[in-house]
Image (cartoon, protein in one colour):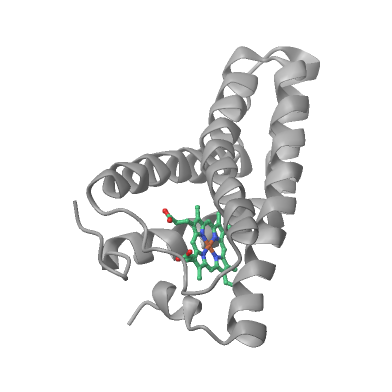
Length: 161
Ligand code: HEM
């Protein structure tokens, strides 16, 4: 098992690709609404371009996250920066693990809600997505704290080049 102080370049590419795809899903979530409302009012599928795009990007995120978790089994994350408070490290780890869990559960619940025409599952899907947004905010704040308060070079680990 590689315990180097760096992420594998593919892990870094996946991190930013997934981040961009998730940002697009949040910014453009409204494109799925007309097709979804048609489905729940008529019980008929209506694959608008918005529905197709939202489902495709969500499924892509799911596949990329599974790929990333698979890579992580062979290349573990680098250790925390020297002298970093273990309590903050524990919080960061919990945020990362929950983020991974949500990045799997959110696309799955979306697919189940849509293809099962299940409104309660769509409510869960939305609640999980709002939770993920909060976690991403915590995660990005943590990264900026390392960059601008601790100046410990942690952000360099996720630099593409
Ligand atoms: C949709 C947005 C994002 C998601 C879902 C996300 C998710 C994650 C996850 C799960 C990890 C842990 C990787 C691992 O060890 O396997 C990670 C690491 C990291 N992320 Fe993000 N991230 C996002 C956005 C950002 C942003 C905006 C920044 C910078 C402001 C950032 C900076 C970092 C850094 C520096 C690490 C490495 C931390 C370390 O080595 O301990 N991420 N990210």
